Length: 472
Image (tube, rainbow, N blue to C red; front, side, top):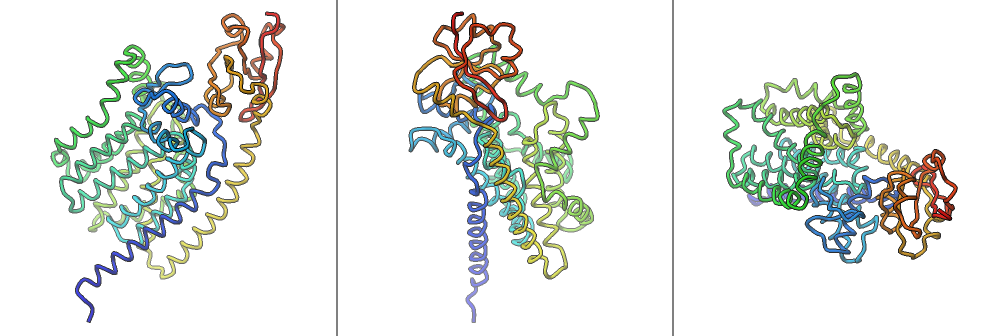
């Protein structure tokens, strides 16, 4: 006769097996081609450059860019993580800059499994986690040095805390939700409030306005403020005018508020970005949504409504924003994966698990080939060898015109400042200065007679020339 706790032990072993399997697969897949793709844009290199400033000068609270000015547009949580990852080696490399994103992506996969298991069952959780792992968005941004994966981890963690609270949890879970919203705000500012928007809309749809009282948690709200607000105060003190007009008004408000009016692109662009970030699994989303709507009168309807609200709220908020970027739609990935994972678990087909496994393995194999080819072609479009040789180890003033200065700073390991045009360099930079100028800007310059080329190079398919003054 089996002991009374045998089912519990079996259940625990099964859960541990699922977690071990997902952890192993996440590390293998997300680690594929890790650090093989160069960081070649200002967006990709901005935070690694600031992490170097932290290690070199100790500017933990307000990391600075090469011009010496603190970067106030985004909170520094991602910079801190990169700095900590780089601390043992004493230097920020592409590998240490990317490592936090990879680990955050693993966390997103495991949290997706936990949410699916909590809302539905183990099969739905495993399938959802494997789908999230192999979306274009999660895989791509696991190899990115931008803060989007950190935001996604905090958002998914906040939703996991809310799910636990909604399914028999305690007030501690609601407090954890608000704390994680605060952490999300430390990654990208106002975008970190997305999980709060999702929860508010979900509560309104299931309980009406009166249900909003349930979300009240004084300790949780205090914790959110304590986590999210102090850095903004420090940033305002550091440069009040630039912070208020350039950061709060432009980067955190007008950046998202639509100002150009309605146009056809406002419809097509958001849909295109949402599809691209959730490929290849988005092709199953219409079927899963239809099945979820049919379940409206069943016991599962409340859980399914949360996923539908998650998808709809994120898409609606980002779609109406003035600025459109594919990465802004990354928070769709876990919700899409969970909805499809649930739909898969409801299929009556006995071989559905084997069919999914076969399709998943095929997609992973295709993705590996595509990523390898694309990475090789991407890297081949950059050549900085001649510029590195020309600069050597000399500490000379280096400027850039019409070439991403932060990408140059990171890859040359030399501070590069912006010269808005050739005239600025000729009139305001001393004779020992160097200028990296794009060939198109150089060709359009009215007077090039006093410039001597030192080396040529290419950055992300953009040819440029390193020049020095000669007889100016």
